[in-house]
Image 1 (cartoon, rainbow, N blue to C red):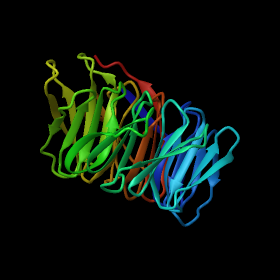
Image 2 (image 1 turned 180 degrees about the horizontal axis):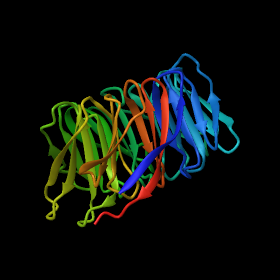
Image 3 (image 1 turned 180 degrees about the vertical axis):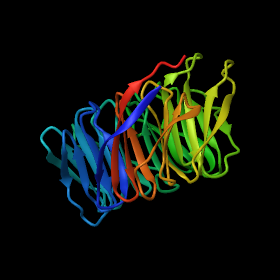
Image 4 (image 1 turned 60 degrees about the vertical axis):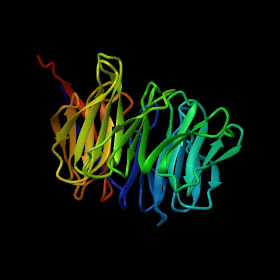
Length: 340
């Protein structure tokens, strides 16, 4: 069992809207509702000072580009190695979600009911029209071949090698507010407003539907580790509770177990890489580390009014989190004990 101790504590001017590690794990970026973006790499440096307009998202590409989008209706692209601003994309409206392809320099970002896909290599922009609502979630499949968008009436999945093709649709009665591909690309999960989760097995038109949550499913996360059956584990949060799902031996049903320890709404949920160690951060001011996604092994503190986001280091040896009062904290692993 791993123990984590606080290594760093810093502060932004306002609510921490997003945090992200670079793929090599050497840099952490954090953005705030005041518009500032800070980098930590052997010390703190300011990439963008507070503007008074929220910076809603930060994302690193595999090639070392950093994208920032927010309330000013622009997406800024920085080259991490030189701290050079190499492109500014006019989105014309508030940018709420953005994500790089895992395998190319294609950046997807939401602008109202549309998602624009900008190719950094060709400068070409593709426009995907979600039509039925604003886009509430964006996630690329791990091989970069498909892009999933969530919103009213479900999820639409585009073929990244042919954007002109009609998308595959995973229908939902209300709206999907969170989506995530499993690491192997075999499953796509969506957390929904109607207190359900949909899980689509790729190339299978009949999705599973899990219900009975106390409220809308705000956060979902897949493990990169797999069970003895060779399938990943899915965690989902609704209000202050978590349900962890595993596919049964017959691969016919997802069996769920409930994890309860938080006393307020969970805002962030993530598995450590190659592990079943699950982190959950909530409005109660605690991060719970759930060993084997079953029981709390450690509780992390350090914010005044609750956590807003968290991110595991690519190697799983550090955990970064942001707070609603601008706190940025990094915990590092200090020991691993063998439990008989």
